[in-house]
Image 1: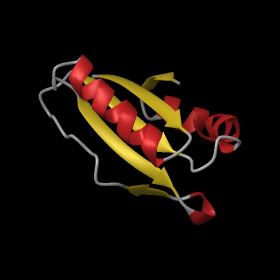
Image 2: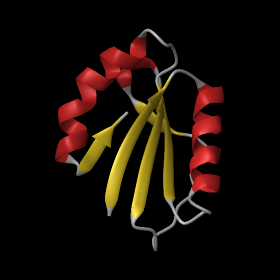
Image 3: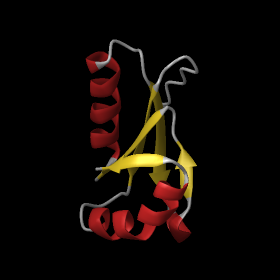
Image 4: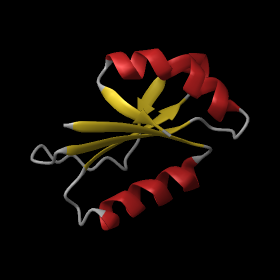
Length: 89
């Protein structure tokens, strides 16, 4: 399965990106949505679209503020690569 992580600034962007991915790939994709909360913990949000038959997996992460996007990508980069993510946006 090809895995991609996408970091976004807020909830609106998370919803937009997840809906865009679903429509672009005709719902033949696995989408996991997470939100960064206090203490740097990721929490699940209600926009997941699990699809076990898909060969494409996207994790969309809302970091809550545009200034946090580059910092959070740098902080999580190695963890994501170790988890099998091939691309981080």
